[in-house]
Amino acid sequence: MFSFYTDWIHYDTPCKGRSNGSLWRIIMKKSSNRSASIQKRPRKVYYLIPGGLILIAGIVLLSLYLNGFFYNRRDVQVKTVSPGEDITSLSRNAKIVTSDMLSHSLSLLSKQMNTSPYLVSWYALPGSISSITSLASEYITSADQVNLLRCYVKNGNKDAAKGLAKAITDDFTGEGGYLVPVRKVSELASAGTAQPIFPANPAYEELPALSACSMESTVEYLRALLEYYQKWGQASDWARIEKLAALLYSEDGTFFEDLTVLAAQPSLVPTGPGQDIVSTVEGQVSTGGSFSTLTLASLDLEVFRMLSSADSKYQPLYDKALTILSGAMISDDLPLFAIGFTQASAGYVYYNGDQIQADLVSSLEVTLHLAEEGKAPQKTILWIKEQLYNQGLLYRSYDLISGQATTDAESVEAYGIILQIARAVDDPDLYSKSLARLEWHLATNSTSAARSTIFRQLDNSRVVVYAKDNLEALLGV
Image (cartoon, rainbow, N blue to C red; front, side):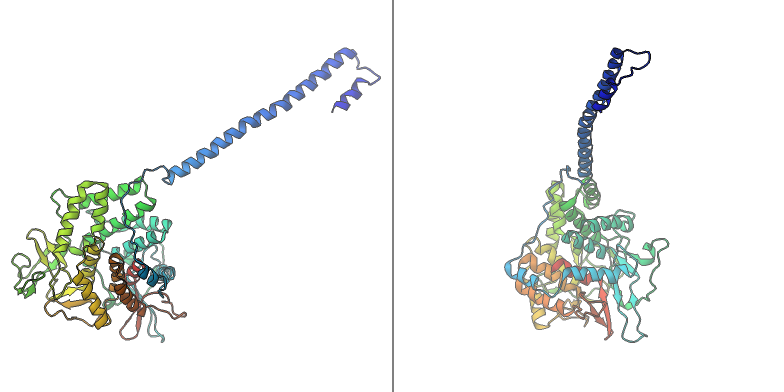
């Protein structure tokens, strides 16, 4: 560029009408303007770089804010069970691969049913001949979805947990704010979504009481939300927790009674540990008709303890729930638990209907609630071990008087709950016996659609996979 101007200056013929001096001034002015424009460019860059950095920093800060990085999360003191070395070793060497069990359960009970994010209650695989076709439940229970949510939280699957938590609130919240126990698959089907047409078999259904709402599902949902909140919670999550907790709270410590009991004629029932067998306690069960009672399995002490850690007003609920559960054991000979408690008469309800029998699963859930607080009766733990050692398995119900099984139907769901109890009390012997029986129901055939899941064999040949059996196992292994 400079040589160009030099050649111009020394050109022999001057520009017409201009002197050499004026020409020099014009050339120097143009050169000065060009130099100034070149000097302004770096100045613009100096402004752009800080501006860009500020913009990037703003985007990062906004992202952190939206993800709750700056949220001052409350400490709800979720307990982390740390079993001893023996149980840890048993769990590590188990045949059950939890990731495979969860993925195959979702494949069978959700994906092929087009019910995502929910699991249907059960699915029966087709048989070896064409006439034995697939069967599936018509129902989706809130209890199964809550346990699935807890499994997601346990495994650290935040996105799945977040989506399922919202879906449960949207689809299972009843008019009073409590969760409904059951919804039909057809009710939850998305518009335009094709539903597989698998016939149902009512004999395979094991649904909870079909009441308007479920205290047990609601309390367990609150537990799942508290566990989620401890890991990833934001202000909106705490607002949801507070809304549910407000349903449970009452100044006098009274709990919602959601279980309708069908009262039979007065029968001989045990009235409590160490007491004689006497007639039905007055005020506890009426002659005929029905009445409402508190479901004892709904009194999850951990939920009330966690709420109390955030707000002391919930402490009386914890204290009352612990008192009720501590007195609910049926007898020394049958150290299982009542199913309900009538708060008006302070009486326990031991059975529902005309069958004088104790329900095993509800008794184990009460045992688990007590075990997590270090309050499980040793007699109950020993009774479970005796059944596993002597009978090799557990049945769904037991006679209140004789203590003998009242059915030949095995309670497969029970083994996952017992694994959780064994972890809570750190009993490797109990864990080992329950795990061995659970693995007896584990599908290991690599060609089976049920592989890696817990199954039952019904009607001598049907392989049926239940959501609750697998979810309880996942929480326990």
